[in-house]
Amino acid sequence: MKTVLSREYGPKQTRGCFYIFDGDRSILNVKTLELPDKGNAQNVSCIPPGVYPLEKITRPNGEIALHIKGVPGRSEILMHPGNFASGSKVDTQGCVLPGLWFVDINEDGNLDVGDSKKAMDLVLRVLPNKSLIHIL
Image (cartoon, rainbow, N blue to C red; front, side, top):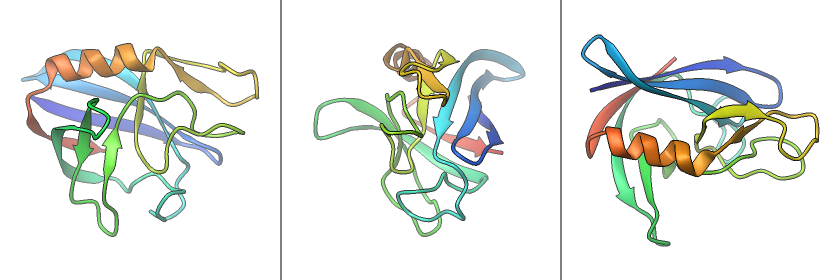
């Protein structure tokens, strides 16, 4: 399995598509939402492009998430459910939020991701316990 996160950087947020490949065949893709690129600064920036180990973990609340490891100068970067990466409500401090589509849920003018828990469930069903993520 190979995963690729292709991103579009914006001033308020970073939108992306997370693809999972089995060989040369795409078997799943979901949308992603992250903080804007602010030079990899903790809690306010998306992580830099690169290839990172990706591992399923169980969070203290019992929820399964994907831990993106080996990010220079950062720790505890996850892919977990959430909808908002900009505006008055934010569900991330540098993590990746999956969703099935982009939508302005709270009508604040910023795109959010919809059906994040469902998207996360689909990703977790397909991915092995350990893999690599290629972030562009």
